[in-house]
Amino acid sequence: MRLLKKVTALSLTMILLLTMTGCGKKDDLDTLGKIKKNGKITIGVESNQEPWCYHAENGELTGFDVELAQAVAEKLGVGVLLFECNWDDLFRGFDQGKYDIIIDSLEKTEEREKKYDFSDPYGQYNMVLVVAEDNTDIKGFEDLKGKKTSNAKGTTYANIASKYGAEVHDSSGVSDAIGMVASGLTDAMINTELPIYDYMKRHPEAALKIVATSDDPAVFMIPVRNGGESATLLAEVNRALSELKEEGTLSEMSNKYLGIDITDEK
Image (cartoon, rainbow, N blue to C red; front, side):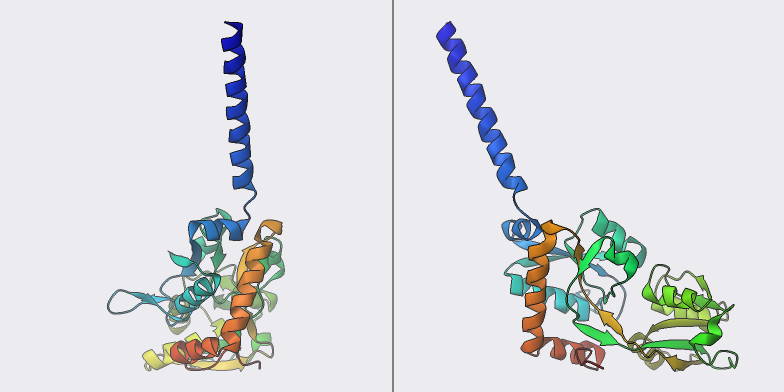
């Protein structure tokens, strides 16, 4: 009986040690290690934002952000799983660990730097101020004080409007923000020039005009959750972006979807 107890105790000890060892190995994997183990990287994208991320007529998800996500995954040697989100849920899902990175033409801000580390820039675009065609009060960003602007709250554009003293009214996207200006609900909106020109091209009847262009361009980067666990992932994302730029792939994607090369430094 004593021998049986000793054997049983020894067996339980070995099982416990093996379990602890197994858990240790699992915990030792950083974000990149988990991605490699799973064979795919999960990426959050903002849906219904043509030409960045949208569904083609055949229902297939396409756009600049989508193709960039696929290219980065290929450079990392893994597959890709895209999570479509609206703007309000994009960072919420990221904080909850639903995806590894976000690709959404994002800029680095002081607030975002508290929670995320950012890749090297992969593109940039000028920001513009849009008003109704018959608006004569707003001629530049300095004229926004006391005016109403439409932008998704929490975006760089909303922060800029607030900085100039505007009252920011929340919008669900570029088209919604422009529509609020066109209908007179707000006085102005700020965004990068590409979606504005694209909207005007698709809606020639829209009585809108661009009255100012910012001196500093919006610079786009890819965020990862900050901390040492994401350090190797960030390094690999930077390597991927560097190679895509050197090969001319980023330039080709930009011209294909945006009609201009946003990788050119302005």
